Image 1 (cartoon, rainbow, N blue to C red):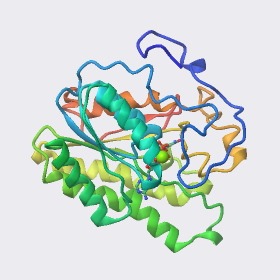
Image 2: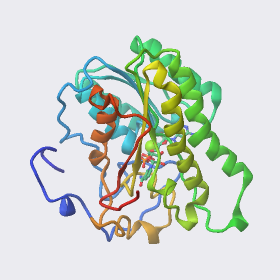
Image 3: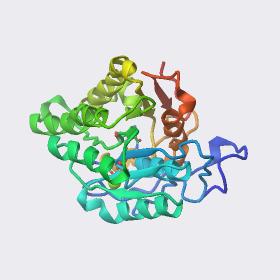
Image 4: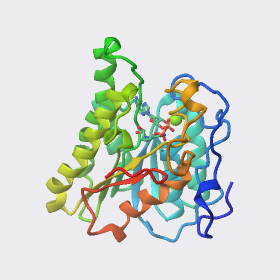
Length: 297
Ligand code: NAD
Ligand code: MG
């Protein structure tokens, strides 16, 4: 959509704004089925060697924010292991081809990350197949909407906790064994973790937990030379939305932000690049909000 990410442009009308066409998707959804199509930086991200020689694992790397991060990391010179669900293999293949087009190694590791052994195996396989690991980016997550406490379901919440929260502990523990000083962990919280919406209370609790994990684990791992930071996206145009929220919310998606539109995955990838890179050597425990001007702190 954009020719490059460096010439100044008005962010207000850089990308599509609501009203959007009604659209709903099953399971985790796919980006190609979205209208308009999300921009993951395929045509616009320009690398400058900021992650040259690094070896990164990115979860949720088939679509949305994870895909944009994988593309940006590869263009910055990192080899990238990509994790996603089995059913997302076609989009996973597509992300892998962009990593390879950037001249970097892509390792594909489909897995259900709500499972402990599967999560550990993804980390170990990434380290083995990349020949080491020094960046762990956790993007995978689900966002069930539950309008009323009358519909609270323990099984749904248990699953959500395992994927959005337990997985962070499992992967961090496994990655620490492969890490050397200078390594970086990046989590993905949400504006919901700070300002919860009434229909996303369960999700918002997990996202608050992720920001809190980031602050706490950063202190614990400082002595090992490992930085832990997070990114808190505002509304982003990804398959998570049409597969999680009803059409009345899709049609006005992003309207509440000062920019009046949702962000595109391409507009958040460089925040992950910064936090992963040595440029952020004195930054740990921070969660950076990327929300189209919506103030949080
Ligand atoms: P997305 O649907 O493209 O990515 C989510 C990914 O999570 C899926 O592609 C899938 O690979 C992965 N996933 C889901 N269930 C899984 C499971 N059981 N095992 C392994 N992987 C699984 O959507 P996205 O918006 O790019 O979401 C990425 C992250 O960003 C999520 O953590 C989400 O909570 C967060 N986030 C998104 C928004 C937004 O508006 N899109 C806002 C705030 C935070
Ligand atoms: Mg997906």
